[in-house]
Image (cartoon, rainbow, N blue to C red; front, side):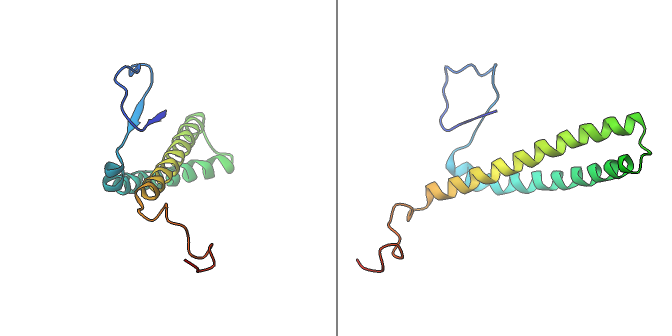
Length: 112
């Protein structure tokens, strides 16, 4: 997956999956999307732990092992997605911070 900061109408949209947010959209919807993904991540983690415990005691059937593998992949993908989205939200906040270009007074020793 590639992140796009501005749309490119000539790019091969059918070959790659693009997700693009403006800074305003990231500020408005980013937290909502993150919370929804975290909720799904928690559900997936519970399901993963359930099948992992069955696997660890040695009573897992082939079907349960397959489910464990699929749930583990989903858990890892969701975890990565949540982590990446939080990073983008933090970046969006830093870019929109009007004080980001001002020098830190602590670094200058407090003198103007």
